[in-house]
Length: 299
Image 1: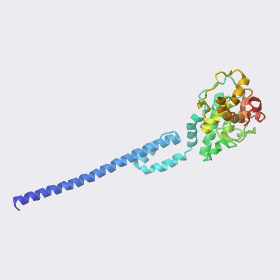
Image 2: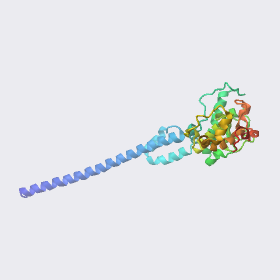
Image 3: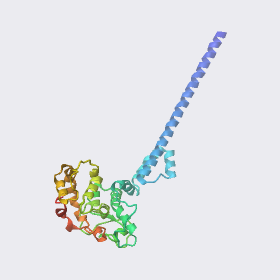
Image 4: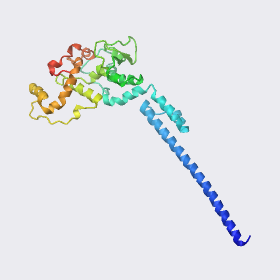
């Protein structure tokens, strides 16, 4: 070959070598990108597993579960199904809803009542948990959510059984499904002592606080959030004037037209002798019509 031909051939070899290098570099780039995608998929699967475990069970995943998903992100779906059927699911949901129900106790003032039990604090804490235990059972047993306000049963443990009128098995321990035996209505959580112990009422309040608790929890309407412009000239110490305002003053009627009829349903749970265990633990069917005396507004 001439010198010129040699130069062209050498140039061609360099070009071919460069193309081969580009191809090899491109292949390496694809592989690197695939590794990055796989690593991202693993990270996302592990993060989702941790979040789901905390939400559904209240605990973090085990090291073995984390390793399984890290090794194979496809294992995530099986673990999520296991979490969704976990025995911890019902109580975990109830714990999350406790901030809505607000029936649980962190402390108790039992200077105003003496309960005929050995462990008063355990009794009072159990009272606060009763509505939530019903909610947990609805979830655990995969019952319709309406069961929460239509069930003819509640959840009772040995502490509550000591003072509750119920068919809780004698000598049993722990939370079990039971029924009240004092002929209270079958309205699920809305017939539990725990609910009405937490949301008590005075004569003047006439069960309106209870009605607002029911409205807030089950219909998402909190009457206390409503902005009203009341009559500043109204003498709140004049019972007759206040009663008249509740029926005629537009500011009062805006709330009381709906909350008073709802409150009228709860007189059977009203305690004439507040903080008495006998009063507190039993339903009083004979008081269902007391709205006629106290407000004049029926259900």
